[in-house]
Amino acid sequence: MKTRSIRRIIASQKVNMGGHIIEQPLPNKFMDQLDPFLLVHHAEWELKGNQRQQEVGIGGHPHRGFSPVTFVFQGDVRHQDSFGNDMVVKAGGTQWMHAGKGITHSERPSKELAAKGGMQEIIQFWVNTPAKYKMEKPYYLPLEAKDSPTIKAEGYHMQVVAGEYQGLKGPAKTFSPMLLLRGEIEANATLEVEIPTHYNTLMYLLDGKLRVNENTANKKDLLWFNNDGETIQISANETTRFILLAGEPIGEEVTSYGPFVMNTQTEIMEALRDAQMGKMGVLIENFD
Ligand code: MN
Image 1 (cartoon, rainbow, N blue to C red):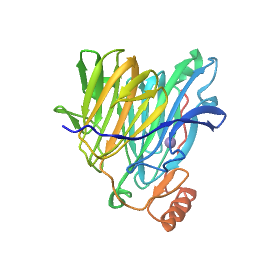
Image 2 (image 1 turned 120 degrees about the vertical axis):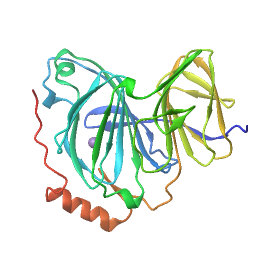
Image 3 (image 1 turned 45 degrees about the vertical axis):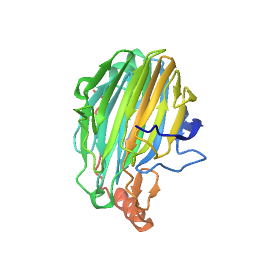
C-alpha cells in the first residue's frame, strides 16, 4: 500500500482565549480549515482550587450549523445546555454535540475540580455539517472512555470515536463519513494507520516526538497530509499522545462567524438574529 505524503508540518500558534493562553493548531497561517475540520484548540492548565464553577470555564453561549467536539485528557468538563442536559465528562471521555439549528451551552470544570483544583486538559475541534443537515434538531452525546472502543496493541492504544477502524465502530453520529481517533504510542513503538485516500487528514501531537513517513514532528505540531496514499507510518522517538482527524470533504462554501458555521452570509445574519431572539434556547445554569 502507498504511504501518504505530508503536505506540511505546522507548529501551533498560541492564542488568548478570555485570559487563558491555549494552543491553536487550526486555523493557521497556511489554512483556514481542512474540510470538514474547522478549528482545533488544545488547552492545558492548572486550576488553583477554592473556586466556584461560575468563576471558571465558559458560560452560556449559542452554536448553530456544526459539531463542537471535546476530547477530555485530564480533569473533566461539565456541560449544561438549553435542552436540560447536564453532564460531567471525565478524562478519557468525549463530549459530542451537534448544534444543528441552535443550542445554548456552557463548558466549565465540575464543581469538584473548581473546588479542589488540579489539571484540566482538553482538545476541542469543530466538525462541519453538510448544508442539508445544518438545521437538524440539536443533540448532545456525552461519552465515557469505555464508550469508544479501544485498540490495544504492543506499544500503542487508540480509541475509535467516530467512523470504523479494524472492525471497531466509533459511537459518534456524524453527517458525513469520517474517522476520528485518539491514541498514545510508546517510545520506540511503531504503528501503521490506514485511512481512505480521499479523506482529508490531520494529525496533532499533544506531546512527545514522532517520525511520520520519514518526517519528524514535535509536540504541538499539526501534520497536514496529502491525499495520495492509504497509510501513515508512525514511529515514536518519545511516548506521544495524538489525535487523528480524517474525513471526506463536504465541498461546500463555508461562512462562519463566532459560534455559527453556515454556508452563506445571509444564514449568518439569520443565526445572529435567531440567537438574539432566544430561538437557540435559554440556559439558566445550575451550580449545585
Ligand atoms: Mn461551545
